Image (cartoon, rainbow, N blue to C red; front, side, top):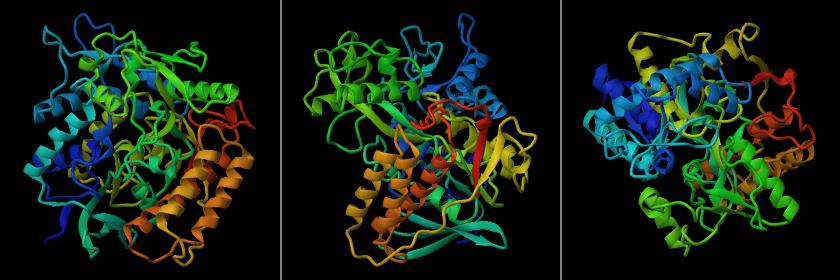
Length: 523
């Protein structure tokens, strides 16, 4: 097969939006590889919807309000230009999805139905099939990619980027049969999603093991904001994993949080980091492992939230009569591979978009329902840049903290990655090692952290690494190596940031410091 113009790694909203744009608008020869099946991504799990201001003569909302809400949630670390791109170009991304066949919910008059979520000043969340927005977006994109991509490879575990003469030229991957292959391309777009499986309690699917960020770090690409891991406040407290998500839209619709005594204790519509911290403090104070979401006052629950209704039925709960047990769960990586406003990374030939990237949009804490929007905006932006012949990163967006740190709105601080782990012989079960690493991250690098807990977490990760083989190509071991590698980087960045900001809360440094109005760059 001839070398591809573009290779997309990952099949979520950012990767597939990019692949469709590349093939249909620019006639590029495109390949897509994905770890599971094409539709089996974190995008599919997104319930709430897409935050976008579509306008209208009687709409009090505006892109300026959306921008202000995003900046407020990001706690001072968002890049203003990146957020402006997001809110201004987001409506076009929504229109493109509709043109591909995505169907968003409308009222009897044919107008889009809008929900409100935490951190948003007005209802602006478009949704599909009530609470199945991600699945609907993924469905439309999968159909379009099947119609346009030159090469699709499913069940392909990408384990390393191919770098020649300082440029990314492809990827090495292992197929379902365990055979090694290399796929070359003029440009590689990394869209491999997040890393919720760093933690023992998460809303992310089992495939979300930070493979993309780990590959980029190994290849020498710069990372940013990786200490900011967002926990979703309202994950169902239940043994199943990943934890069933109780959408933010429930609270926007009127559901309230209650403590173990049945009392309200927080404004439910604050940003997620604020609500998660309030929940954890209440749980510690009351010596309980969960609290409750009260949705008994919501009308037509099963019709408005059919996916959640079915999930609750499976575990024997009825939202119309039962208080729903909840606890925070790891949900979203706010940082990742640093990019400019067009998706270029510090490694020529490598582009990144979506949760795997640090574009400057999210800062220290992502505003609810900006994630799908980011993917559908910045994935296609990278493709347009490639088609225009752009060859490298420019000092825009989060990349300003790398290329022009003294002039950037958010300053940059260089942070060396931890030295490579000392891998050892395969004298343990990969599942057991994975669980031990996840438990350590949850205990010491979760919603609350301090110097001692982070040091203990780092020690556990180093200790379990000694039981992980360096060369075994079993996918289970590949995932464990990625989790440990990325976990050590997250812990190092969290230990370095001696303040509390957004999704990073230090019990030993509880205040936000102006001196830390900067982005940590790991390279």
